[in-house]
Each structure stands twice: as structure tokens, then as C-alpha cells.
Image 1 (cartoon, helix red, strand yellow):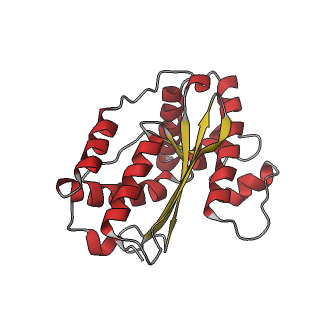
Image 2 (cartoon, rainbow, N blue to C red):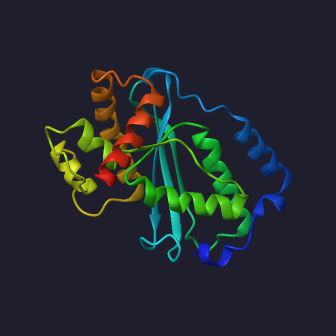
Length: 219
């Protein structure tokens, strides 16, 4: 199993194969476009699996991501699932998977549920393995949903609570991709509400997410 704890001292960007270094340079050169409307923006819904909830102590086991474009459409082929827990995992394969993740997301805004949790694992892995300070634009559904759908619930709730409110219950234990697709469906609902509230660009939605998180954490 891949353990972040064993790799904290390694910043792999200087040791990567030439093709991965070129791929990282190309990714870093991509522009971050947040001024376009939702119909012209590709968002990426991201979730992780981990061995626990403590970024400094627990292991990152996998990443799943789904693209949401054209105002809320989920394309069948626009998805990626990475598993770091397999017995055949090597340093090079891990690095290639993380670079593939960056290439998949590009500089799209990332949609998560509880950004501090998801983002901390991603940031730690990408910094330790690839030497990049990973700070994408995040949209946090955990804070935005109660702000945008106050008539349903105005407090911070577990994900399953929102799935039930929107009639998206999933029986039994969900796998990582199913969970990510459910997040994408919630995000589709949120995009409709955002447009109705004239939060009509990616940048405004990112700003709204940051504002909701700040206000609810400080009040």
C-alpha cells in the first residue's frame, strides 16, 4: 500500500523521467480560465479514498474524478479512477498516475465535498511526489449547498443528508466512482440554482464558495 508517511522527504520533480517533467511543464503553463459562463466551463468533481481522516497520519488510497461540462452534462468517457493501494504499485507508476490526474483536470475548477479534507490529501501527495504546490480553485458543496438551498436545510450536514433531500439515496456501501457521480449530480442541481441567483461564471461560483466557507466558519 502506498504510504505518504514514507515519502515526506522526497520531492520527486528533479528525479522524474523526462516525459513526466515535460507533461508537468505543459500542465503548469495552462491558463486558469474562470471568467466563462457555466455552459462554457468544464468543472471536475473530485473525491478521494483514504485509510482515515488525518492527513498527517493516514494513507491516500485513490482518487476518482468526473468532468462536468456544457452547463452540467456528465460525459460517459470523461472520468478517471486511480488506485494507489494495489500490490503492484511502484514509485514510477505512482508518479505517472498523479501526472495523469493533473492532465485530466487541467486547470478546471474542482468540485469537492469538504475541501479541507480532500484538498489536504491531494496537496500533500502532489507536493511530495511531484514538487508542485497544488492550489486549484475549489468549489465546496458542503458549504455551498446549505447556502444555495436554504429552504431545504441551512446548516452543514453529511453528504448522505443532501442525497436524501434530493432523492438520490444509494443503497448499501458506495464505491468511489458511484460516490463521485452522486456528487456530480448534486453539482448539476447547484449549477441550476447558481444561474437563477445570477452567479453565472466559474469565478463567481468559486468566490461564493470561499465566502460561504469563511462566513460560516467565523460566525
